[in-house]
Image (cartoon, rainbow, N blue to C red; front, side, top):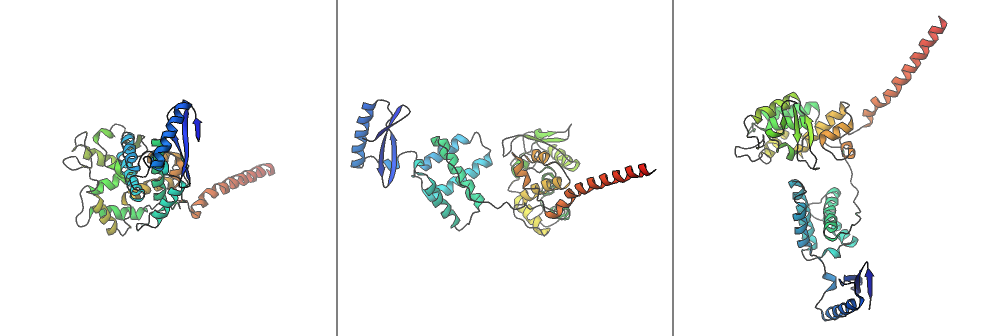
Amino acid sequence: MPLWKFGKVWHYRTQRNGRRFSVSLKTNDKAEAERRAAKMLREIESGEFDVTQRGIPLASAAKRFLEQMKPRWHPETCRYHALHIKHLLDFFGPNLTLEAFNRRTTADYIKHRKASITRPSNATINKEIGTLYQMLHQMTGRRHSIEKLPVDRKPQRHLSSQEEADLLKACRNGHRVSPDLYDAVVVCLDTGLRRGELFRITPWHLDIENKQLTVPISKTHRFRVIPLTPRAFSILVNRAKTRRADKPVFSHEDGTPHVEYLRMPLERAYKRAGLPSARPWYTLRHTFANKLLRKGAPIYEVRLLMGHTTVTTTEIYANLQPQNLHGTIGLIAEEESEKSGAVVEKRLKLVK
């Protein structure tokens, strides 16, 4: 009888449909393991036990996974992981067990997603596969190596000084302009906050004495402190005076945030300014980072202000072009000219 011992527990090994399966017999006694294995073999032959469908079904595993991770994750993180799981369930179905996942099933899913009508990017597919493998590790305790699809890191879109001025003008003037839109755009441009962080600012987060803002909940689960520019500080203080201490400064009278309320007005402002309206809030955040890096701010300090876990993410915003490198090479030329000038001055002294 094909029995084998893993640690102190006996397992029964069998083969079905060209694949090997191992089932734990949950005992360390060999005689008892042989009796259980004989009973299992009779159940397999009679069809009472399907060894290929043992384990946790995907639907129940996904539900347990989200419930376990909800206290640790940010609400936005839970939302996009739930969306990834929805795509996984649509393809694999609710009854496929976690033990059935392997490289072949992952390759089939990637092929399906690439052929779908929505045509998701490689980065999106990588995130969905990452959610699947994170769930497999959480539910089964086994780690799976992920073969990620290649992703083309394109420079992030940002606004020039003129485009920024045009956008702010469009936020103030035009048909159906929200009175809160200008304030929200200015604060985002001067702090680099993510959209979710912007609409969670409350008077509690403002340090009026030091003119700085504390971001307590972020995508990376780390709080950070952002010094405020004079105009951003003025806007937030004025809005905080009309809000309760525990309510967002960008909110309706009942305290609900302006997230969806300002989405369409901002897209219309982009169009009035003649700018592409794709990912409008992200563009403001990218502008903040790019402006600091253009002015020569150290990239490690920009990383702290942006709330990135690693400097690798911040490098995406640097957007270095060949013409931007002339200044860097010029430092060497300056050093050489200083050396030559010193040599000439020394020779003149000798001649005298």
